[in-house]
Amino acid sequence: MKTDLRYQNGFLYEHHGAWYVRYRQRISKEDGSCNLNHLSKHLGRSKDFRDISDVELRRASFMQTVNRDRFSANSRITLTAFVEGAYLPWTKEERRASTSKGHHEIWINHIRDHVGELHPREFRTVDASRMLRTIAKENDLTKTTLQHIKSVLSTIFTYAKNEGAFDGANPVDGVLIPRHAKEPGETHAYDLGQVLQILDRLPLLEKSLVATAALAGLRQGELGGLEWTDYTGTELVIKRSIWMSVVNLPKTRASRDSVPVNPALAEILGEYRSSRGSPKAGVVFHSGDGLSIGADRVGRRVIRRALEAIRLPWYGWHALRRGLASNLYEIGAPDKVVQRILRHSKPHVTRERYILY
Image (cartoon, rainbow, N blue to C red; front, side, top):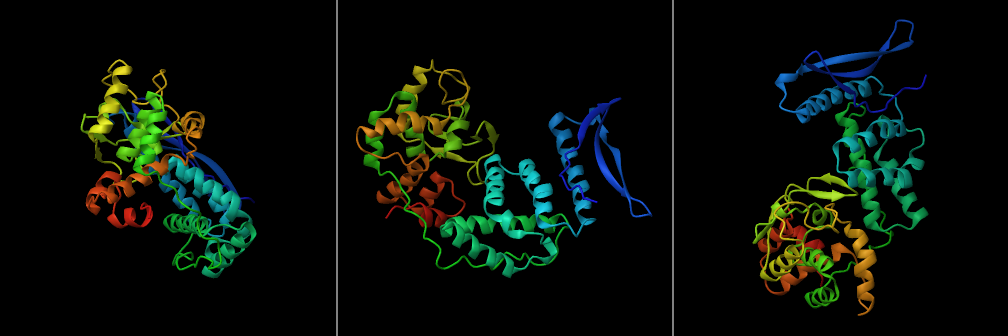
């Protein structure tokens, strides 16, 4: 009999002044067969919750217990069944939308075909090592991509341990990236002179987007999530990020901070704000409908074409943020200042990954 390992969210409903969640539970019988029962859990009286978000938090907490107990009872599940029935649905619930999509693509494109019928409890470090070597040879991937694959596989086993589907040390810890794998490609960053060239070529909306990325270091998703209430005139407070219409918190805890706005950026944002009727609230960057503009589409359709006239390639939004770090160091800004503007958790992250030498 095939075991159902789909991650259950439960069905939330209100009845007679109280909130309940309905879920499924497989009950084993003495003859070895199973019955699938539908059960309901009382979450609390309606008046004891401030709003629906509090009810959802209570539901999510209870359903995590239900799912964890189900995994513990099925310790012989295959790794594929666990990932597709539990781990990937969990990432949709608990992780940023972009992270969930990335893990799903890495699993489908690189990992799934290499795990066969292995069970989590049978998986060893040597299996992960051989897998990475095979993947590297078959796809000619860079060391950075292989590191991403290793990271996803490691996270799968970390989650399995937390849900009772696996015990012991994480078998992916200590796995080496193949030495002969390709080195990462060249990274790109715009220096200050190039940024000024780009700004001179763009209409006001696109100019304001680029200026905010290049002079304040906002990430692409953070540009979409910016609202006028987040702008004080001297600072931008980063509270949210939008990826494919999904609103998330910024990438890390350190990212949820404010960044200074220099006079050049303040002037551009002031002109742009006036052109929109000096709004006090709402999305900052939109095309007139009040909805957040798609920065990726703006890059492809407007900025790339504008830069063709000056023969400057469009390397994407991150090249503006990366260039800001190099530009700040070039004028002698201390590590702590650069870290503060880029909102990295540690200064060495900026030094190692963002500096253009």
